Length: 313
Image 1 (tube, one colour):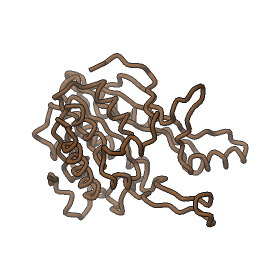
Image 2: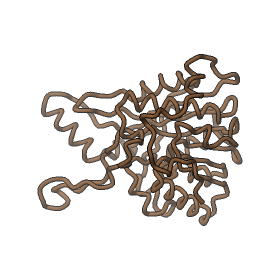
Image 3: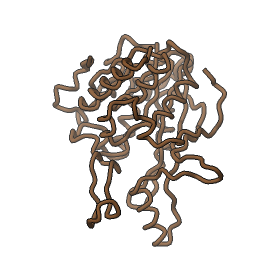
């Protein structure tokens, strides 16, 4: 565990597809909002030791879990959507087949109730590593006129879910409220001194910059976590005297449109890594206690029987 670290990590030296090739099942690329494996691996190596427990409350296709078991850590994840949870299990099996020594488990459920879904892990996690959703629709994969010779843009793999109970479908205020419930539950899973690391980046809505990292910072502190560090995780590559662009088609498209209107905006080329700690004695406040004790709000609950906390094998 290397607690002392630099403020900028060169995590984008290879494209996402290259980082996953031969390490994840090919179907993993369908998920529209995956964490870079290099970011997950660097966080886990920095803040945990072999044999310790890593938790991801919104694990998707299991990037955090896979990188943890490859580093001889143990991992547990919760995922709302069964299709992604099954891919996480497949990726853990793939990692085991290729020599990973750690153990991983995946539970299908609503992580706003994570402390109830993983009651046996209370006070055991050395690290919680996750990222909030950015909305129900993301950039996904595209083919433009340049690729096809046909007018227009074709998109696919750009939906998290069709379930309106998924946080990805909520407006910003509801998303942050739900994320606060998730983090409050994670506080119960963290051991004293344990780390919660959140990767997040700003985004634009109709040209307006949304400071999601700033909002998440406030939510995490409201959940009882203490801010410790902020690290820049590069999504671009570092070449010989220049940057290697990894921005998506739509990031560049929106930037060009803004420049044409006289607004000099740029495509985001990094993730903020916000690092928090659980203090030895958690912050005692009425807000924190209510967050930890509340169940999932009725308005956000799904009628699906998949939200029952089943562990997938």
